[in-house]
Amino acid sequence: MKTNSHIPSPDALLAFDALARLGSFTAAAEAIGCAKSRISQLVKDLERELGTVLVLRNTRRVALTEAGRRLACHAAQLRSMLDKVRPDIEEAQGALGGPLRVSSTASFAQYLLGPLLGELAARHPALEVELVADNRLQDPVEAGLDFCLRTRNVHDERLVAKSIGFVWEELFAAPAYLEQAGIPQTPEELLKHRLLHNSYSESGLDWRLEKEGQFVSVTIRPTLLCDQYAVIANAACAGQGIGLLPQYVVRQHLARGELSPVLPGWRSSSWPVFLVYPYRQPMPKKYEAFLQFVIPRLRGVLGHG
Image (cartoon, rainbow, N blue to C red; front, side, top):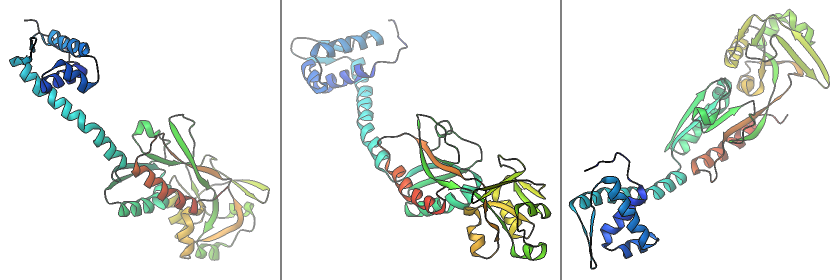
C-alpha cells in the first residue's frame, strides 16, 4: 500500500472528527457549517493521502475502520487543541502579567526607567520586566522588544513613535571645585578649567551653547572622556571638573548639594525623546498599563523643548 509523507489537512481532520463523533455526514456538515458533499470530499482526500480506508459507508450508518478509529483519536486532540486557542489568546491579551522587555540608553535606564519599572513591577507582581540598557539604535521588532525609549525617531510604518519630551545639557560642577578653581563668567572661560565630556556626543569635542539667542561654540580639551553620563556626573561630584550634563541626570545631585550650576542660562540645543513600539491594535492590557504609568512620569521629568 502506498504511503504519503504529506501532513494531513487540518480542515479534513476536523471534518473527520465531526463525522466520527456524530456518525453521520449530514450531522457533521451541520456541525461544521458546510455542505454534506464537502465532508465527503474531505474524508476521501484523507483516505487518499493516508493510503487507507477510514470509513465504511452504507445507506443506514457510518462505521470506522481500525485505521479510522485510530485517526479519530488524533483528530479529537486537534479539535481539543484548537478549542483552547481563542481563550488562551484572549487571556494573554487581557492579562496584566508575563514578559515585558524595554530598551533605552544607559543613562535613561539608570536615571529614568530603572526606578519607574521597579515601581511598575511592584504594582503588578505578575509582570516579568526586563530592561535592556544599550546606547545603540535598536529596532524593537527585530530585537524582540516591547518598547524602546530613545532620542531618534525612525520613520517606519510598523512602529509607533510617541513624543515624550526633550533633553538638553547644562553645565555643572561641585561647589568645592568652583571654590578652588573659580567660577567662569563666560563660555570662553571654560577653557581655563578641567572639563568632563561625554564622548557619545554627536558634536565631537565642541560644546555648542546658547543663551537667549546667543550661540557660542567652544572646542574643548577634556580631562576626562567617557560615553556614560553617570561617570561624568560622578566625576563632577568628586570635584574633578565641569561637566555638560542633562537635567534628569543631575537633579538628585542638585537636591543633595553635590553639584551647582555653572553659567546659568547657557545650555546645549535640545533634542526630542520618543517612546517607540510596534503597532498593535487592540493593545494587550499589560502594554496599556505600561504606557499609562510611564508616559506621564517621564513627561514630568523631561523638558518641553
